[in-house]
Amino acid sequence: MADIFMPSDEAELAGFVEAAKAGNYPLEVCGFRSKREAGRPVNPAAVVSTAKLSGITFYEPGELVISAKAGTPLHEVEAALARKNQELPFEPADLSRIYGTDPLAASLGSVAAMNISGPRRILRGAARDYLLGIRAINGEGSAIKSGGRVMKNVTGVDLVKGLCGSWGTLAVLTELTLKVLPKAQEARTIFFLGLSDEAGVGVMSEAMGTPYEVSGTIHLHGSLVSRLNDAEITQTNAPVTALRLEGDPQSVVYRMEKLRRELAPFGDTYDLDHQRSLSFWGDIRSLTFLSANFGRPLWRITVAPSKAAQIVRALSAFFDLSAAYEWSGGLIWLETPSSSEASVTELRRVLAEFEADSMLMRAPRSVRSSIEVFHPLPLTKMKLVQAIKKAFDPAGVLNPGRMYAGV
Image (cartoon, rainbow, N blue to C red; front, side, top):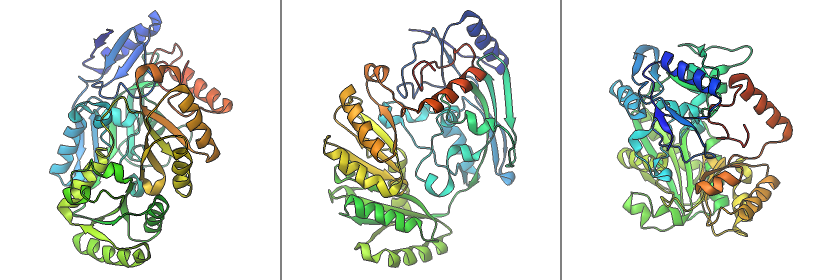
Protein backbone atom coordinates (compact mmCIF):
# COMPACT_ATOMS: atom_id res chain seq x y z
CA MET A 1 0.00 0.00 0.00
CA ALA A 2 1.32 3.46 -0.94
CA ASP A 3 2.36 5.81 1.87
CA ILE A 4 -0.18 8.51 2.76
CA PHE A 5 1.20 12.03 3.18
CA MET A 6 -0.97 14.57 5.02
CA PRO A 7 0.51 18.08 4.81
CA SER A 8 -0.43 20.45 7.58
CA ASP A 9 -0.18 23.57 5.44
CA GLU A 10 -0.01 24.72 1.83
CA ALA A 11 3.78 25.19 1.83
CA GLU A 12 4.34 21.61 2.97
CA LEU A 13 2.00 20.36 0.25
CA ALA A 14 3.79 22.42 -2.40
CA GLY A 15 7.15 20.97 -1.40
CA PHE A 16 5.81 17.43 -1.55
CA VAL A 17 4.30 17.89 -5.03
CA GLU A 18 7.49 19.57 -6.25
CA ALA A 19 9.51 16.59 -5.01
CA ALA A 20 7.11 14.19 -6.77
CA LYS A 21 7.64 16.08 -10.00
CA ALA A 22 11.42 16.01 -9.59
CA GLY A 23 11.33 12.28 -8.85
CA ASN A 24 8.72 11.66 -11.56
CA TYR A 25 6.52 9.52 -9.30
CA PRO A 26 2.70 9.57 -9.47
CA LEU A 27 0.48 10.78 -6.64
CA GLU A 28 -3.06 9.88 -5.74
CA VAL A 29 -4.80 13.09 -4.65
CA CYS A 30 -7.61 12.71 -2.11
CA GLY A 31 -9.29 14.03 1.01
CA PHE A 32 -10.57 11.20 3.22
CA ARG A 33 -10.53 8.66 0.33
CA SER A 34 -14.30 8.28 0.50
CA LYS A 35 -14.53 8.39 -3.31
CA ARG A 36 -11.35 6.59 -4.31
CA GLU A 37 -13.46 3.93 -6.08
CA ALA A 38 -14.81 6.58 -8.44
CA GLY A 39 -13.14 7.11 -11.78
CA ARG A 40 -10.32 5.02 -13.19
CA PRO A 41 -7.94 3.47 -10.62
CA VAL A 42 -4.71 5.34 -9.93
CA ASN A 43 -1.54 3.33 -9.29
CA PRO A 44 0.42 5.83 -7.19
CA ALA A 45 3.83 5.78 -5.62
CA ALA A 46 2.33 7.84 -2.78
CA VAL A 47 -0.98 9.28 -1.65
CA VAL A 48 -1.37 12.96 -0.77
CA SER A 49 -4.37 13.74 1.43
CA THR A 50 -5.81 17.15 2.31
CA ALA A 51 -7.38 15.77 5.50
CA LYS A 52 -5.27 18.03 7.74
CA LEU A 53 -5.97 21.13 5.66
CA SER A 54 -9.20 21.66 7.54
CA GLY A 55 -11.26 24.44 9.02
CA ILE A 56 -13.58 27.31 8.08
CA THR A 57 -11.38 30.33 7.42
CA PHE A 58 -14.04 32.96 6.70
CA TYR A 59 -17.80 33.08 7.10
CA GLU A 60 -19.89 36.21 6.81
CA PRO A 61 -23.59 35.28 6.84
CA GLY A 62 -24.60 38.81 5.88
CA GLU A 63 -22.50 38.58 2.71
CA LEU A 64 -23.64 35.00 1.97
CA VAL A 65 -20.03 33.86 1.59
CA ILE A 66 -18.05 31.08 3.26
CA SER A 67 -14.42 30.01 2.84
CA ALA A 68 -12.96 26.74 4.12
CA LYS A 69 -9.89 24.61 3.57
CA ALA A 70 -10.30 21.70 1.19
CA GLY A 71 -10.06 18.99 3.85
CA THR A 72 -12.90 20.43 5.91
CA PRO A 73 -15.61 17.76 6.31
CA LEU A 74 -18.67 18.75 4.30
CA HIS A 75 -20.97 18.08 7.27
CA GLU A 76 -19.05 20.67 9.34
CA VAL A 77 -19.56 23.31 6.67
CA GLU A 78 -23.27 22.47 6.38
CA ALA A 79 -23.69 22.53 10.17
CA ALA A 80 -22.10 25.99 10.38
CA LEU A 81 -24.42 27.24 7.65
CA ALA A 82 -27.49 25.64 9.25
CA ARG A 83 -26.82 27.51 12.50
CA LYS A 84 -27.34 30.72 10.52
CA ASN A 85 -30.28 29.24 8.58
CA GLN A 86 -28.26 29.05 5.38
CA GLU A 87 -27.18 26.26 3.01
CA LEU A 88 -25.19 25.29 -0.07
CA PRO A 89 -27.70 26.01 -2.86
CA PHE A 90 -26.58 23.13 -5.10
CA GLU A 91 -27.35 20.53 -2.39
CA PRO A 92 -24.33 18.25 -2.97
CA ALA A 93 -25.27 14.60 -3.41
CA ASP A 94 -24.05 12.09 -0.83
CA LEU A 95 -22.22 9.30 -2.68
CA SER A 96 -21.41 7.23 0.41
CA ARG A 97 -24.09 4.62 -0.29
CA ILE A 98 -22.84 3.69 -3.73
CA TYR A 99 -19.22 3.44 -2.51
CA GLY A 100 -19.90 1.90 0.88
CA THR A 101 -18.14 4.67 2.82
CA ASP A 102 -18.89 6.83 5.85
CA PRO A 103 -21.31 9.68 5.01
CA LEU A 104 -19.32 11.94 7.33
CA ALA A 105 -16.10 11.35 5.41
CA ALA A 106 -16.89 13.61 2.45
CA SER A 107 -14.69 16.71 2.29
CA LEU A 108 -15.53 20.09 0.82
CA GLY A 109 -12.60 19.66 -1.58
CA SER A 110 -14.10 16.48 -3.03
CA VAL A 111 -17.35 18.30 -3.76
CA ALA A 112 -15.47 20.87 -5.84
CA ALA A 113 -13.04 18.38 -7.38
CA MET A 114 -15.94 16.28 -8.69
CA ASN A 115 -18.44 19.14 -9.15
CA ILE A 116 -20.98 17.22 -7.07
CA SER A 117 -24.52 18.57 -7.19
CA GLY A 118 -27.83 17.18 -5.97
CA PRO A 119 -31.57 17.47 -6.62
CA ARG A 120 -31.67 21.27 -6.35
CA ARG A 121 -29.25 21.65 -9.24
CA ILE A 122 -32.19 21.77 -11.64
CA LEU A 123 -33.29 25.09 -10.17
CA ARG A 124 -30.19 26.61 -8.56
CA GLY A 125 -27.32 25.37 -10.71
CA ALA A 126 -24.23 23.23 -10.18
CA ALA A 127 -21.48 23.40 -7.57
CA ARG A 128 -19.17 25.28 -9.96
CA ASP A 129 -21.79 28.04 -10.27
CA TYR A 130 -21.33 28.89 -6.58
CA LEU A 131 -17.57 28.57 -6.38
CA LEU A 132 -16.23 32.11 -6.05
CA GLY A 133 -12.56 31.46 -5.39
CA ILE A 134 -9.95 28.75 -5.00
CA ARG A 135 -6.45 28.20 -3.74
CA ALA A 136 -4.52 25.19 -5.06
CA ILE A 137 -1.11 23.67 -5.76
CA ASN A 138 -0.48 22.66 -9.37
CA GLY A 139 1.65 19.77 -10.63
CA GLU A 140 4.81 21.86 -10.48
CA GLY A 141 4.36 22.58 -6.79
CA SER A 142 3.36 26.19 -7.43
CA ALA A 143 0.52 27.94 -5.62
CA ILE A 144 -2.52 29.07 -7.62
CA LYS A 145 -5.06 31.61 -6.48
CA SER A 146 -8.10 32.56 -8.53
CA GLY A 147 -11.34 34.39 -7.84
CA GLY A 148 -12.33 36.00 -4.57
CA ARG A 149 -15.34 36.56 -2.33
CA VAL A 150 -17.71 38.20 -4.79
CA MET A 151 -19.47 37.01 -7.94
CA LYS A 152 -18.15 38.82 -11.00
CA ASN A 153 -17.77 38.51 -14.74
CA VAL A 154 -14.61 36.78 -15.94
CA THR A 155 -12.55 37.54 -19.01
CA GLY A 156 -9.99 35.05 -20.24
CA VAL A 157 -9.59 31.68 -18.53
CA ASP A 158 -11.85 31.06 -15.52
CA LEU A 159 -9.59 28.89 -13.36
CA VAL A 160 -12.22 28.59 -10.64
CA LYS A 161 -14.69 26.81 -12.91
CA GLY A 162 -11.91 25.05 -14.81
CA LEU A 163 -10.54 23.31 -11.72
CA CYS A 164 -14.00 22.44 -10.43
CA GLY A 165 -14.71 19.00 -11.81
CA SER A 166 -11.10 18.22 -12.74
CA TRP A 167 -10.88 15.34 -10.24
CA GLY A 168 -7.52 16.37 -8.81
CA THR A 169 -5.78 15.81 -12.14
CA LEU A 170 -4.71 19.45 -12.61
CA ALA A 171 -4.08 20.72 -9.09
CA VAL A 172 -4.58 19.89 -5.43
CA LEU A 173 -7.30 22.18 -4.07
CA THR A 174 -6.36 23.71 -0.71
CA GLU A 175 -9.07 26.30 -0.01
CA LEU A 176 -12.49 27.14 -1.44
CA THR A 177 -14.80 30.14 -1.25
CA LEU A 178 -18.48 29.62 -2.00
CA LYS A 179 -21.63 31.66 -2.25
CA VAL A 180 -24.42 30.40 0.01
CA LEU A 181 -28.15 31.16 0.23
CA PRO A 182 -30.80 31.31 2.98
CA LYS A 183 -32.42 27.96 3.76
CA ALA A 184 -36.05 27.58 2.69
CA GLN A 185 -38.56 27.77 5.54
CA GLU A 186 -40.92 25.21 4.02
CA ALA A 187 -40.64 22.19 1.72
CA ARG A 188 -43.61 20.38 0.20
CA THR A 189 -43.82 17.60 -2.38
CA ILE A 190 -46.39 16.65 -5.01
CA PHE A 191 -46.14 13.11 -6.31
CA PHE A 192 -47.79 10.72 -8.74
CA LEU A 193 -47.97 6.94 -8.60
CA GLY A 194 -47.77 4.45 -11.43
CA LEU A 195 -46.77 6.73 -14.30
CA SER A 196 -44.83 5.30 -17.23
CA ASP A 197 -41.34 6.63 -17.87
CA GLU A 198 -42.62 8.81 -20.72
CA ALA A 199 -45.40 10.25 -18.56
CA GLY A 200 -43.05 10.73 -15.60
CA VAL A 201 -40.59 12.71 -17.72
CA GLY A 202 -43.53 14.62 -19.17
CA VAL A 203 -44.77 15.62 -15.70
CA MET A 204 -41.31 16.76 -14.63
CA SER A 205 -40.68 18.73 -17.80
CA GLU A 206 -44.12 20.34 -17.65
CA ALA A 207 -43.53 21.34 -14.02
CA MET A 208 -40.16 22.89 -14.80
CA GLY A 209 -41.81 24.95 -17.52
CA THR A 210 -44.11 26.66 -15.04
CA PRO A 211 -43.23 29.79 -13.01
CA TYR A 212 -43.65 27.89 -9.72
CA GLU A 213 -39.92 27.27 -9.02
CA VAL A 214 -39.83 23.49 -8.67
CA SER A 215 -36.59 22.71 -6.80
CA GLY A 216 -36.38 18.96 -7.27
CA THR A 217 -37.75 16.31 -9.62
CA ILE A 218 -37.41 12.52 -9.64
CA HIS A 219 -39.07 9.58 -11.39
CA LEU A 220 -38.26 6.17 -9.92
CA HIS A 221 -38.90 2.73 -11.33
CA GLY A 222 -41.03 0.67 -8.96
CA SER A 223 -38.09 -1.66 -8.24
CA LEU A 224 -36.18 1.27 -6.70
CA VAL A 225 -39.04 2.67 -4.60
CA SER A 226 -38.80 -0.13 -2.02
CA ARG A 227 -35.41 1.24 -0.85
CA LEU A 228 -36.86 4.55 0.32
CA ASN A 229 -37.59 5.19 3.98
CA ASP A 230 -41.15 6.51 3.64
CA ALA A 231 -43.21 3.40 4.49
CA GLU A 232 -46.41 4.61 2.83
CA ILE A 233 -44.61 5.19 -0.46
CA THR A 234 -42.55 1.99 -0.40
CA GLN A 235 -45.66 -0.13 0.16
CA THR A 236 -47.13 0.98 -3.16
CA ASN A 237 -44.50 -0.94 -5.17
CA ALA A 238 -45.32 1.46 -8.01
CA PRO A 239 -43.26 3.98 -9.95
CA VAL A 240 -43.10 7.34 -8.17
CA THR A 241 -42.80 10.76 -9.80
CA ALA A 242 -42.12 13.55 -7.29
CA LEU A 243 -41.81 17.34 -7.49
CA ARG A 244 -40.51 19.55 -4.70
CA LEU A 245 -41.38 23.15 -3.92
CA GLU A 246 -39.53 25.24 -1.32
CA GLY A 247 -39.69 28.72 0.12
CA ASP A 248 -41.94 30.84 2.30
CA PRO A 249 -44.81 28.67 3.68
CA GLN A 250 -47.60 30.82 2.25
CA SER A 251 -45.89 30.95 -1.14
CA VAL A 252 -45.32 27.18 -1.20
CA VAL A 253 -49.00 26.43 -0.51
CA TYR A 254 -50.10 28.83 -3.25
CA ARG A 255 -47.63 27.41 -5.78
CA MET A 256 -48.59 23.83 -4.90
CA GLU A 257 -52.26 24.45 -5.64
CA LYS A 258 -51.45 26.15 -8.94
CA LEU A 259 -49.05 23.39 -9.97
CA ARG A 260 -51.46 20.63 -9.01
CA ARG A 261 -54.13 22.16 -11.25
CA GLU A 262 -51.75 22.45 -14.20
CA LEU A 263 -50.67 18.83 -13.84
CA ALA A 264 -54.18 17.41 -13.35
CA PRO A 265 -54.26 15.87 -16.87
CA PHE A 266 -51.48 13.48 -15.80
CA GLY A 267 -53.63 11.86 -13.10
CA ASP A 268 -54.25 11.92 -9.36
CA THR A 269 -51.71 13.69 -7.15
CA TYR A 270 -50.63 13.13 -3.56
CA ASP A 271 -48.53 15.32 -1.35
CA LEU A 272 -45.95 15.20 1.44
CA ASP A 273 -45.84 17.76 4.23
CA HIS A 274 -42.69 19.55 5.34
CA GLN A 275 -41.20 16.80 7.51
CA ARG A 276 -41.95 13.98 5.09
CA SER A 277 -40.58 16.09 2.26
CA LEU A 278 -37.32 16.63 4.14
CA SER A 279 -37.03 12.87 4.68
CA PHE A 280 -37.95 11.97 1.10
CA TRP A 281 -35.51 14.40 -0.53
CA GLY A 282 -32.87 13.41 1.99
CA ASP A 283 -33.23 9.90 0.54
CA ILE A 284 -32.89 11.27 -2.99
CA ARG A 285 -29.84 13.35 -2.12
CA SER A 286 -28.17 10.33 -0.47
CA LEU A 287 -29.12 8.01 -3.37
CA THR A 288 -30.98 5.65 -1.03
CA PHE A 289 -32.94 4.38 -4.03
CA LEU A 290 -29.79 2.83 -5.53
CA SER A 291 -28.30 -0.54 -4.65
CA ALA A 292 -25.53 -0.67 -2.08
CA ASN A 293 -24.14 -3.77 -3.84
CA PHE A 294 -20.70 -2.74 -5.09
CA GLY A 295 -20.73 -5.60 -7.57
CA ARG A 296 -23.73 -4.10 -9.37
CA PRO A 297 -22.57 -1.61 -12.02
CA LEU A 298 -24.01 1.88 -11.80
CA TRP A 299 -24.13 4.37 -14.67
CA ARG A 300 -24.72 8.11 -14.60
CA ILE A 301 -26.13 9.30 -17.93
CA THR A 302 -26.83 12.89 -18.96
CA VAL A 303 -29.04 13.64 -21.95
CA ALA A 304 -31.74 15.96 -23.21
CA PRO A 305 -34.85 15.15 -21.12
CA SER A 306 -36.89 14.59 -24.27
CA LYS A 307 -34.69 11.57 -25.08
CA ALA A 308 -34.43 10.09 -21.58
CA ALA A 309 -37.28 7.57 -21.68
CA GLN A 310 -36.30 6.51 -25.21
CA ILE A 311 -32.77 5.71 -24.04
CA VAL A 312 -33.96 3.54 -21.17
CA ARG A 313 -36.41 1.74 -23.44
CA ALA A 314 -33.67 1.09 -26.01
CA LEU A 315 -31.25 -0.20 -23.37
CA SER A 316 -33.95 -2.44 -21.89
CA ALA A 317 -33.70 -4.54 -25.04
CA PHE A 318 -30.14 -5.51 -24.02
CA PHE A 319 -30.11 -5.28 -20.22
CA ASP A 320 -32.24 -6.15 -17.22
CA LEU A 321 -32.09 -2.70 -15.66
CA SER A 322 -33.62 -0.29 -13.17
CA ALA A 323 -33.60 3.46 -13.68
CA ALA A 324 -34.15 6.72 -11.85
CA TYR A 325 -34.65 10.00 -13.69
CA GLU A 326 -33.50 13.21 -11.98
CA TRP A 327 -33.41 16.78 -13.28
CA SER A 328 -36.57 16.19 -15.37
CA GLY A 329 -34.84 13.29 -17.11
CA GLY A 330 -31.62 15.17 -17.81
CA LEU A 331 -29.84 12.82 -15.41
CA ILE A 332 -30.45 9.07 -15.43
CA TRP A 333 -29.12 6.70 -12.78
CA LEU A 334 -28.97 3.24 -14.33
CA GLU A 335 -28.24 -0.06 -12.60
CA THR A 336 -27.21 -2.88 -14.95
CA PRO A 337 -26.28 -6.51 -14.23
CA SER A 338 -22.98 -6.47 -16.14
CA SER A 339 -20.00 -4.17 -16.76
CA SER A 340 -18.11 -6.42 -19.15
CA GLU A 341 -16.31 -4.81 -22.05
CA ALA A 342 -18.95 -6.14 -24.45
CA SER A 343 -21.82 -4.73 -22.37
CA VAL A 344 -20.10 -1.34 -22.08
CA THR A 345 -19.60 -1.24 -25.85
CA GLU A 346 -23.27 -2.05 -26.43
CA LEU A 347 -24.45 0.52 -23.89
CA ARG A 348 -22.34 3.30 -25.36
CA ARG A 349 -23.41 2.38 -28.88
CA VAL A 350 -27.02 3.00 -27.86
CA LEU A 351 -26.14 6.20 -26.04
CA ALA A 352 -24.34 7.52 -29.13
CA GLU A 353 -27.59 7.27 -31.07
CA PHE A 354 -29.18 9.68 -28.59
CA GLU A 355 -26.14 12.00 -28.16
CA ALA A 356 -25.99 11.12 -24.47
CA ASP A 357 -23.00 11.36 -22.15
CA SER A 358 -22.16 8.65 -19.62
CA MET A 359 -19.95 7.79 -16.69
CA LEU A 360 -19.52 4.38 -15.08
CA MET A 361 -19.91 5.50 -11.48
CA ARG A 362 -19.36 2.11 -9.86
CA ALA A 363 -17.72 -1.13 -10.97
CA PRO A 364 -14.87 -3.39 -9.80
CA ARG A 365 -11.36 -1.94 -10.20
CA SER A 366 -10.48 -4.57 -12.81
CA VAL A 367 -13.31 -3.29 -14.99
CA ARG A 368 -12.53 0.39 -14.47
CA SER A 369 -8.91 -0.27 -15.40
CA SER A 370 -9.79 -1.77 -18.75
CA ILE A 371 -12.45 0.59 -20.12
CA GLU A 372 -13.15 4.29 -20.38
CA VAL A 373 -15.02 5.23 -17.20
CA PHE A 374 -15.81 8.72 -18.49
CA HIS A 375 -17.53 9.06 -21.82
CA PRO A 376 -14.95 8.78 -24.64
CA LEU A 377 -13.99 12.15 -26.12
CA PRO A 378 -13.57 13.03 -29.80
CA LEU A 379 -9.92 13.38 -30.80
CA THR A 380 -10.06 17.19 -30.93
CA LYS A 381 -11.43 17.42 -27.38
CA MET A 382 -8.96 14.84 -26.09
CA LYS A 383 -6.07 16.89 -27.48
CA LEU A 384 -7.41 19.91 -25.61
CA VAL A 385 -7.66 17.88 -22.38
CA GLN A 386 -4.08 16.68 -22.85
CA ALA A 387 -2.86 20.24 -23.46
CA ILE A 388 -4.58 21.53 -20.30
CA LYS A 389 -3.12 18.65 -18.28
CA LYS A 390 0.36 19.45 -19.57
CA ALA A 391 -0.04 23.13 -18.71
CA PHE A 392 -1.02 22.45 -15.10
CA ASP A 393 0.88 19.22 -14.48
CA PRO A 394 3.76 18.84 -17.00
CA ALA A 395 5.17 15.67 -15.44
CA GLY A 396 1.74 14.06 -15.06
CA VAL A 397 2.12 13.32 -11.34
CA LEU A 398 -1.37 14.30 -10.11
CA ASN A 399 -3.97 11.52 -10.29
CA PRO A 400 -2.60 10.21 -13.62
CA GLY A 401 -5.23 8.33 -15.61
CA ARG A 402 -8.00 9.07 -13.10
CA MET A 403 -10.26 10.52 -15.79
CA TYR A 404 -8.76 9.25 -19.05
CA ALA A 405 -6.08 6.68 -19.77
CA GLY A 406 -2.70 8.28 -20.32
CA VAL A 407 -3.80 11.73 -19.10
